[in-house]
Length: 74
Image 1 (cartoon, rainbow, N blue to C red):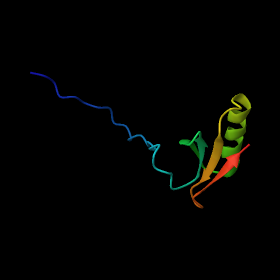
Image 2 (image 1 turned 135 degrees about the vertical axis):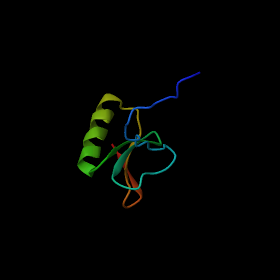
Image 3 (image 1 turned 90 degrees about the horizontal axis):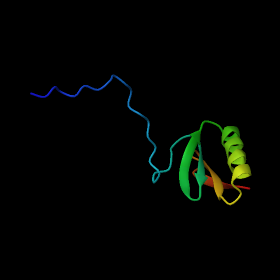
Image 4 (image 1 turned 45 degrees about the vertical axis):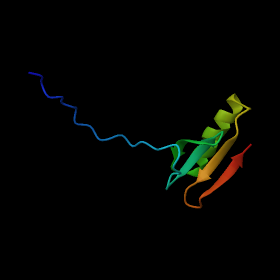
């Protein structure tokens, strides 16, 4: 007889789907795909600057969930 599978007591992970825009905060959009989410615009701009400095060929935008608009980073 098999033992029942027991899972550790953990909180479920917060997974963001790539095809659904976030509802809060600021998110990096890299080549049209939602990536990392940030609480404030300054953090998102810092991350975009670091990414753009390393990879110049990427198209990076910052998505503002409250206004539902994208701002191109260059």
